[in-house]
Amino acid sequence: MRAEPRRTAGQLVEGLLSGVERKTCWSLAERAGHADPQAMQRLLRTAVWDVDAVRDDVRDWLIAKLGHPDAVLVTDETGFLKKGVCSVGVQRQYTGTAGRIENSQVGVFLAYVSPTGRALIDRRLYLPESSWCDKPARLAAAGVPDDVGFATKPALARQMIAAALDNGVPARWVTGGEVYGTDPRLRTYLEQRGIGYVLAIGCARRVRVNDGRTLVRADEVAERIPTTQWQTHSCGPGAKGPHDYLWAWVITATRPNERRWLLIRRNRTTGELAFYLCWSPGPVPLHTLVRVAGSRWSIEELFQTGKGQVGLDHYQVGGWTGWQRFVTLAMLALAVLTILAATQQPNTDPDIIALTVAEIRRLLNAFVLTPPPPPAHTLDWSTWRRASQARARRSHYQRRLHHHTTRKIK
Image (cartoon, rainbow, N blue to C red):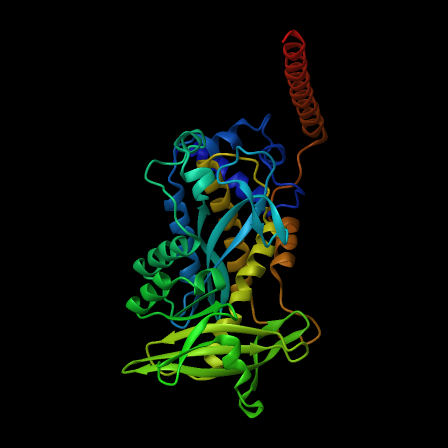
């Protein structure tokens, strides 16, 4: 990467870490002292640099600080709400971000969870098959490379897990939601690599019991478990205390050097059930499977932190390259906070909690990052921004007038 885009990238990451409320190219360029947003936009669209190499550097940096042989790779997707139809991969689809069907993009991510910390280490943009992958002209307009075709969310997860393992990322387990647990190719791949998994499935999923001779729905298996066989375990700490649930497990197959289980979680208050298919190359205790299942919440917290602290979803780029670059630089900003949190001195004061990512970001802004620009610069940007908005408004009015006139002539 040349000196100019490298400098701009550093300024963009500083802006993502800053207290700027909306982290768009305009606001980040204003904070960096630029006269206009062109340098920031060029960095995300046309500047020559290898975004995947930067992603790999971020991953390697994180693993050097957080790496652990018993770590868990967690895969999940998150939605990015968008207007219009031009943003790459956008369509009306269900997203947990909104809790309903919305016009959105969906990104599939891979997180690394170890005893020393957790972080996002990879990303893939999901391209819907019928509305995008079957429309070459639309793909070309969004700048999607010719070698990128349709891939399901589990297939994207498999790509990221393979890249992590092939590059020496130490991990013993993989976990993910029902989308990933129901994909046999993902499970087969993990077994071939010798990586254990705890993957969620639906209640109607049929599993083999009685040494693999009988197929039974998962919820029917749960009904047959005696009360005495349910055990209380915490699957991780929460803001209000440990996440305690009732757990039970049923061996579904035992072969030399491998074990398979159906793991069942029951809410102690509501009785709600959750189910997981589990595989391990060797015997493990129940609390290990519980710990791996609980690791899935880490990626949901990372999505919340990424969007709330470093603007993971604040981008205003529509093309393939812009999405990859902005999201990767946001992952870098989040990695900075993650490593600072992981390397802080142990907290010995029982009356205060350890430094959180949000508090580290506030301190970073107070003591390290550059101060805000002088008033004249802010006023110049106000003028530039309002002039740009005026041009956009005139253009909009002219298009509407032309459309109205054309209709009257017809």
